[in-house]
Image (cartoon, rainbow, N blue to C red; front, side, top):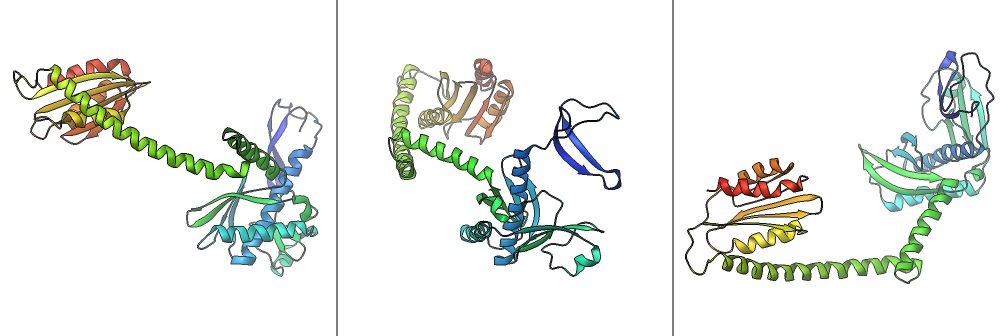
Length: 352
């Protein structure tokens, strides 16, 4: 803190001193302000900075994989490591070595050295600046130039945990956290797992198997619902066509079937369209008010005329959406639900 303002960042301006970026009341030019250290923030930054040194050194020792960049974010940290063929096992090996080093409570020494002295030191990475360097040494484990806040012993870091990793721009991006952040993340994850387990009336560690079983059961039910909906759509198509006098043979082909439904999803709308165009010389122009979305499906029998893709593009302009497909079938959706009836009317007239 500087006065009543919170310091959110510090920028080294070299000879001009240190620029403090603050959040809160701005002091007047020349005004004296009282600075206060945020001990929790200091501890957090110390654990993340030192934790990064330890984890990066572990990757070098195990896999000769140097860290190319480091970012300390609000809830986690990221390092980009030149690690070839990353695997969960390799990441775990590095994390295990890092935590062993932490629990050994190795001493950490901070000292300044000249450029000439730095040349003779086995630094893990080349310094990014010239002149005098601030060097962080973890006893018999790591030696690196750094200007960040660091612990006096590796034990103060507490623990390191990796949340996730991915390939990124030819490197391996590792999302990790150290110290208090690990504790907070564990509490959150444990609470989430416990709540999920409670919904199954089961133990926390039984949840993954129960969720897997539930997903499989849901897939089976979804397949069954789809099969039943296909049967229902065929019956619905037959009912619609009977209502037009199809069987009486008193209609001029092709027959245009235009219908608007409420709360019918895109899949069911498409299934009904397919059931309709299974009959000869049918053009189906179907729409649905599906919540806040206008859905359209235009389809025709193989022996019916018309370009459904062209019709769909015009209709989608009216419902303020997008869509497309092929000449015999097209789908679309938009946000202007109130324009559905007009869109279908225009499409129907275009076929006349």
